[in-house]
Image (cartoon, rainbow, N blue to C red; front, side):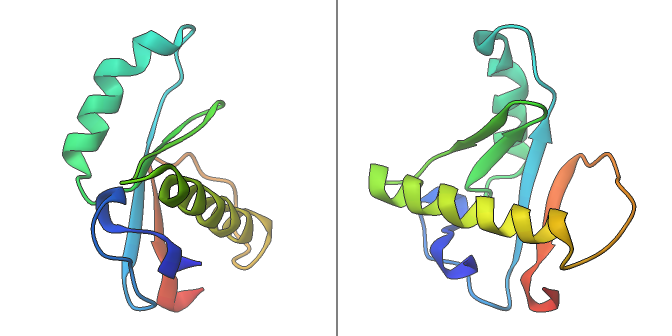
Length: 104
């Protein structure tokens, strides 16, 4: 799945040995109020192909709709693996999702 994720959603695809970080921001009552925290997350994590919004969903981008759709699918599968038991651990409140793919 990592090979379907591109650096910053635009550049080359990640490899098995790469680490993927996706920032998590807090949700707001209105989608337009996410603008500032989304911009800050994108500046702090320029290589991230997406931003996860707590209790809402994920914003993904790429050079084409098909690339964004593929990245979304791959990230959902990676999150599912992480959450459902590839690594059993207590629930934590993350500020960013960090995948060291070589350890999965």
